[in-house]
Amino acid sequence: MLKAAVPFLAILLIWTSCSTAEDDLSFDPNLELLFSNDSVAFDTLLSDSRSATRRLTIFNPNENAILLSEIILGKNQASDYSMVVNGKQGAQQLNERILGGDSLLILVEVNINPRNRNTPYLVKDSIIFNWNGNTEHVKLVSWGQDGNRLQNQILCDEVWTKDRPYIVSDTLLVRPNCQLTIEPGTQVFFENDAALFIQGSLMAVGDSANHIIFRNARFDGVYDQVPGQWNGIYFLEGSANNQVSFAEIFNGQVGLRVGSPDDDAIPDLVVSNTRIFNMSSDGILAFTSDLEATNCLIYNCGRYLVGNVAGGNYTYSHCTFSNDQSFFVHSLPSVQFADNVILSESELLTADLTVEMTNCIVWGSQDEEFNINNDGGSIAIATLTTNIIRSGEDIFGNFTSLDFNFPGFSNQFLFDYSLDTLAFAQGKGIDIGVLKDIEDTPRDDMPDIGAFERVDKN
Image 1: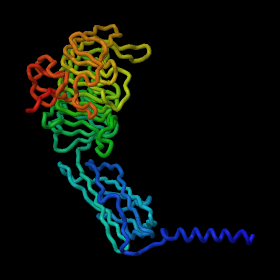
Image 2 (image 1 turned 60 degrees about the horizontal axis):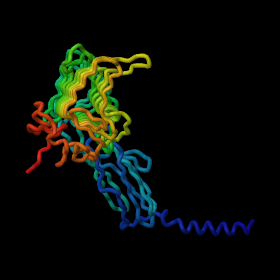
Image 3 (image 1 turned 120 degrees about the horizontal axis):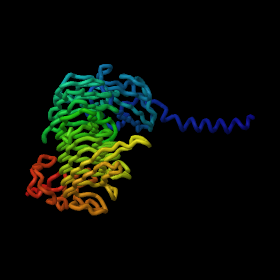
Image 4 (image 1 turned 30 degrees about the vertical axis):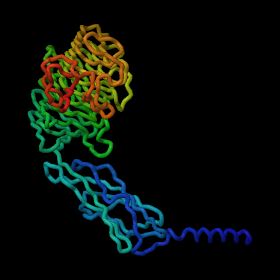
């Protein structure tokens, strides 16, 4: 037994002698620490909303351990920021040891208290580090934005202005015989699964310099381009006299969903100069409805760019629809019209269908991106004139192709669907009285097909 103990003691002594340096604290004031950033910045954040988490790493490049005697937020408990140091949360942490050659991770978040201001405001603080008589400051920087918060409310004859954004939680309903007016430049932010329902009417009319924005309420990191973060805008049965112009609708589940059957063909929703994109399901989804769209761009949707089913009356002029570059895998045509919709295994809803599409681009990654289905047996009339359609079939009076970027988009990889210098779509349209394009650029008497008019700069 005694002979076995001698080698064990020797191993223990060797291990102890090799491991003491990084454990031993040094109070030498010349020892430096390295910081992964000299500042931690956050994107613009709505007040009373918690940010994503940012990481700050402190590295000890020295042989010996260093004791951080204090890690503290500059504004202490009054700070909008919070931090977690080595698993411990609080505005002040004391005596945190960093071994030689080791690091310490700090997690930082911000939850901004409202300032009652219309314009964005700067929110600053810093994390102060003290060790061995040294002090280091890491700045914390973000922008705050106050907003008008709305949750589960019924609206009637309200006017929304651009002074502050509107933040929608859960659902809002515009009741029958009432109108919601949204002025140019207004921003509407929807939190997770929030939706706007219209039984009355929506008048959302922007202009070329002041678009109306409907989008998700998160701006930080990847959230800026993630589909499906809110529900959509729904026009319910009985809704009429709706107009959406110079708007941007993105990062939701469905952009505009229309279900307003009636006995006439007068458009219950008129959409113009509007972009709808990054939708996890559909851009425009309509059931037995009357809709008119001009100068609209719809792209990157999980199912339909345009899905108009169960009949109805639909007019599309100078629109660009493309699922060429997409976050989604598609198996169905991106633009679909039908006189029917399946309600159950034994029930099929049908109605007469009228489609008029002129000077539009229908494009995507499938060989056939356009389909009209009249399996319901109702009357289906489609008038298609001078459109560019992704198809292997000839469609009389239109241009069809399977060639890559046949329309001539500037850069569909970056979702830029304006036309390049040699675009086939240039000058191929017919004059139907649409005098300007989606960006309010004048069209000439030989207009380009699609939402954009190409204007060469001298």
